[in-house]
Image (cartoon, rainbow, N blue to C red):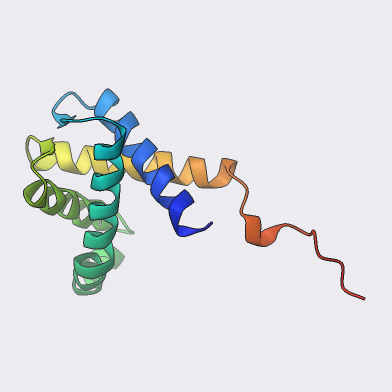
Length: 123
């Protein structure tokens, strides 16, 4: 999927998560969700890579469950960087990170990847 579609999926996942989790809130409209999705993506790419690498032994020992803790911390960092996102507590962040991960995984399965289309016939 291209970057814009990935951001739309992430913004939709954040919007659904704020509707599900009572202690997570976003102040603003559609553009605010896109801004938070972009900020969360940047935090994931920069800090997330380092944290996941440092936490790799614990992630292996817990069979991947510690990755949810790292994702919760990344969500709290995004909360700290943005005044439009409020996540009230560490366990709320872990729950929200789990829900965001599940929603984005489901949406990535449901939405077709344009790179995998078979429109080109080679001769």
